[in-house]
Length: 234
Ligand SMILES: [Zn+2]
Image 1: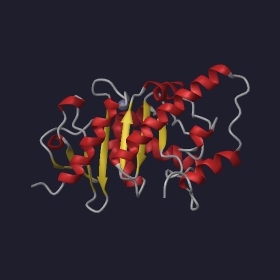
Image 2: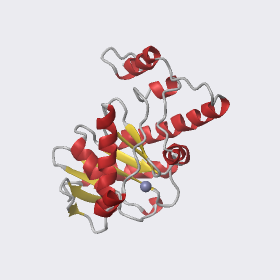
Image 3: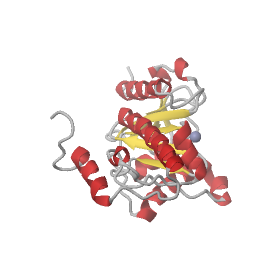
Image 4: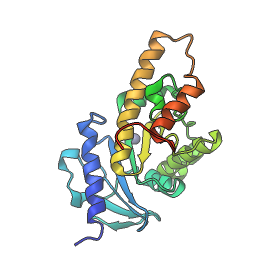
């Protein structure tokens, strides 16, 4: 029996959530689950439809990018996942989709400002949109450089990846992460809703878009995720 059975199950279950939440059609999207102790992650195989996935079909990859277990080729976005696991210690899952509203903001190359408390409940600041990738980086290693672009977007802004567990890659789409693969999908669903509401807000009030005051933004974040968090059942 595979020592990665539980990790592959986790990745499989999380990938199945993608079509359930209408986050992707066909094979547009992928989720991975990371085991920090073993230094490996299980990821969706490339080009396989969600209905055809099985736990066994998940591909296990090491932090060096080498396939550790699996008969199929890993998702073409595998290198982006690998760069993020290496750069963002403590995350346990990553989701990438082309969900319509999130992708619209990525294509417009607009970071999503904190316009309301829905956003503040899940991200303690604007959701950054990266720069466009330059030609040299595309030629070097497109998927790896996508990861580097995300890491740079957080570094440039002095943004903590725990505070804002989501990003928009310019002209491409969203990546989200979390403590587990399931939480990264949850954040992808959340991001899609935030982007949808933000788009409607901008349509209704395009000229006087003011960010939510910082004290309200912080309050919403802290009551859910801060030291004295009191949201939900204890
Ligand atoms: Zn993509």
